[in-house]
Length: 453
Image 1: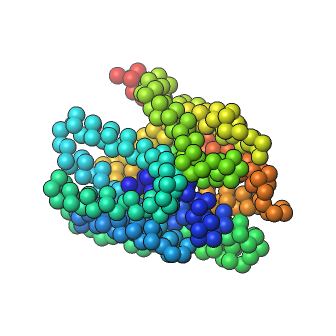
Image 2 (image 1 turned 30 degrees about the horizontal axis):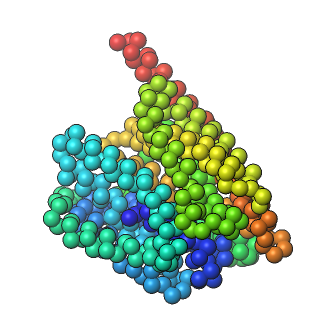
Image 3 (image 1 turned 180 degrees about the vertical axis):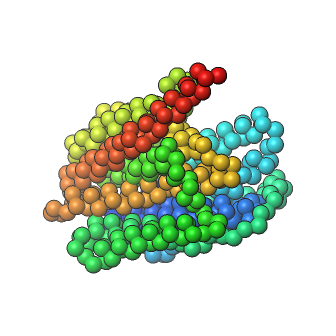
């Protein structure tokens, strides 16, 4: 439910824009309202599970998510839809951290727990792709609103099953770092709003610079709060490791470039190639199939070459595929101009996320394991929202001249995809200058230890 809802409306965005009279720039908030709330409150949701109990927090999250989904489906205006999407994000931040913890409690035997977590990971990974297809299918057959209503019966079924199949976890004494959560959410939302407003009204508008300034001040306040808090949601000591810092920064920059692709490409398919919503969702499948296929090769690749080298190779492949895709124009066709670049990009993506996750958790003490895991997800969600905000500003700048036509729209998409490739390149540089030296140093220490023994 949670992962699917990040993508279920992507293929419906053109219809949502038409129904609720939203521009391309304004449409980013249909995604960003959900992602920013999800990522911003994720660590607070994990902490709430520790203090209040995982099952209780999970149940509250599912109930709120179902209610917010119904409100989103019924929303008569854009403002109410965005408010409901933000509420969905908050609910997802409550439920998601507790889900994995409850799996660990429910399956105490190591082998069964490993199998359960593998299924959990597969379902989570598939959610985004399934969302594109389901969203497209429902939009074509019924309405984009059906994608929201779909969550309601699923949520009710879950609420009925939780008391029977899930046991409550032990609670811990502690306090919630509300101030830390609020300053981080306000900071990232203000930055995203500034970039999106720049796309709509230009960089000289006072609300643009005011919003960007508020974002910078709020994030500085967040760092100050976390440095002084007795129980911070983001312990700053996690950044002491060059490996972890490089993994967090690299993942954030990766999502800045990767996520917006799946905002722009479905719109290119529908507005320029005139695909319907379902066809646009299915057109992304080459990327997804190859990405999941790479997971079977990853254990062998990681054992033979190590995380850093596989990560570098994956980023280079992803940059190549994205740069190739950026060559699209109004004269392009799906085959070959999109099909083959999507395959290359899927191959690269399949090599990237697992190493980033492993390196982001490397060397973490047991007391910080939950926060480090949450920070991986925060970097993921924050990168997605920030990258989309920045690249929609790039898109609108390129799309300004004259009346929008297929040619200018396609050109603006192409320029935005170049921006995605730039972000991916920045991620590669973070890996080369932060992760790779740290990886070499760790290997040298390990070799010395073996020689000494």
